Image (tube, rainbow, N blue to C red; front, side, top):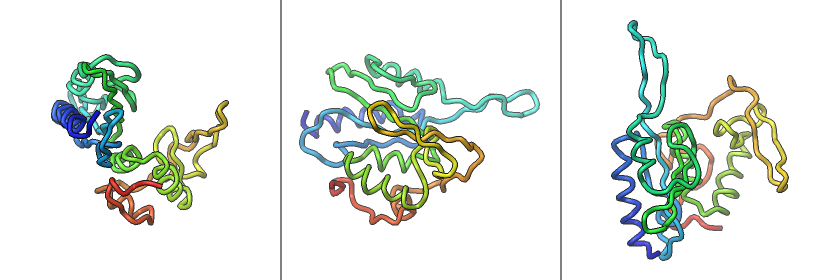
Length: 195
């Protein structure tokens, strides 16, 4: 699909989800301004709603129900869960695939950077930089390597599992540029992120 048509679809999706998100942005090849686009990628941080008791104590914090309703009505759900998942893949009415990456406010700019890509750039420049700083991408987000264990997958790749949930957390980045500064990596506009 041509980028102009894909960008219009992505913007429409963002407008639908935005009232239910604290942050949302287009990522992937659209953000990198590639002329041809295979799929649409969006990163979002849904608003969190607290349920409180009569005394004002928080009983439960969860994503807004409006987010799940809108996300579930975007098209045919192929993978994922809007209520508690970190990822959804949706087949839109025009058969285009939407990859919806769901995160929280604290990790939004890291997710935006890695989901913008390119895949090689994200792996080598971004993940390589946080590894040099002693961090890894775990099941709970970015965590200190010392607080995680590496689990080898049958395909030879590895995943990191956090085993110390009380360990050091990364900073809350205020922008994508702030995230790159923390990594000690020169910020590049999305269209220049390739290796």
